[in-house]
Length: 443
Image (cartoon, rainbow, N blue to C red; front, top):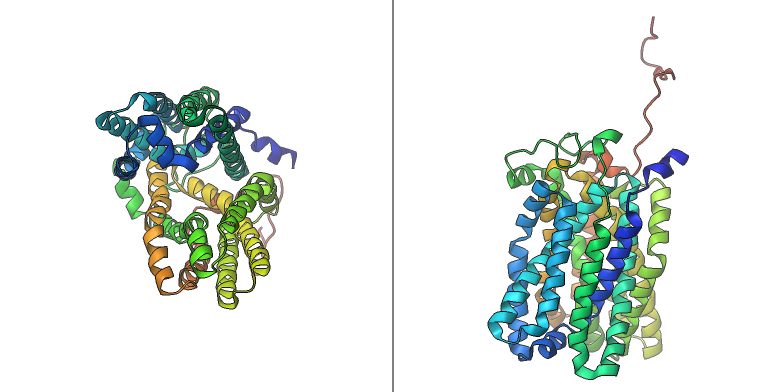
């Protein structure tokens, strides 16, 4: 047991987590007000800001494969530091980008860094941690992101109350400082040598980070890995559920349940508080139970399905306002627990299933499942909602059940070190192996 605890230590972990927390505060200072934020910072109209942000966001998706290649070539730590620097520079320049060309240029550079960051962050977890430490870091980072974004929203509210719309400019510079500090902290994180602990990549490559032999095929190797593509497809089905809280919940409450907008705020508050408050605890319980990552991720998907099915029941019964509030909050709790069970296991599963030498390319492919789900969710949910308020929840229920089934079926096709957070201890050479009853006794 003591040995297992030693294996989970990550050099520079506190600096990494502190950096995540600080950068999340910065993100929370502008995400809730994105259109308003950039309108006041640049002076451009809402329509122009919206068009630029959409175009640059799509361009950011297009370069995610390049981010994966950069990770494999230069390492996740270096790529992470570069992206923090680019984001810091971008937000420092936003108040100076008053013209359309200047804003478009700054927004494009910043969007490229923002969209590539999840790929690099996931790769960094694989580079600095192994075994159960990956699951723990996934949970800790998610909890800090939720807490930091909530704190950032409170900070910007205070800034705006003190300085009015001029506070958006101060917020932009504060965000630049937050990203710069996060980069300095992450620079203290050290990579681990996976071969020193006998951990193999999915392709069987062994060696220190950056020194393993890189297959010349590049993304062709990823596309030929059918189990990993299956894992990515399963995650796409679950990722649609992750989009439900921000996209579908508000529309469903207002158009189908005819409830007040305050219900949406209550749902977000419960979700954020639970993620920040008990996320690490739940992930720790799951990890210590010894559950396989595929099965704990599948359990998270099943909890998603239960929450979505609950929405169908609620949308059919449509009780009074008080009963609706209680039922919605109960559904949000189930949904959030599913998120907290699935996210660390699913993230660590993808990181550990990727061969070390091409981990960046693998995770860039995996992260596309989230990006594609986020892009499709608005049109998909609104189209189904227009037909019947329960229809999108029925679709999500089937998708979550399909993800759970796919994860369990993929289990025997994925590398053992990806499926198991803690690999079974090898049989000691001094301990005689048990001879099966059907086998002849050794002479």
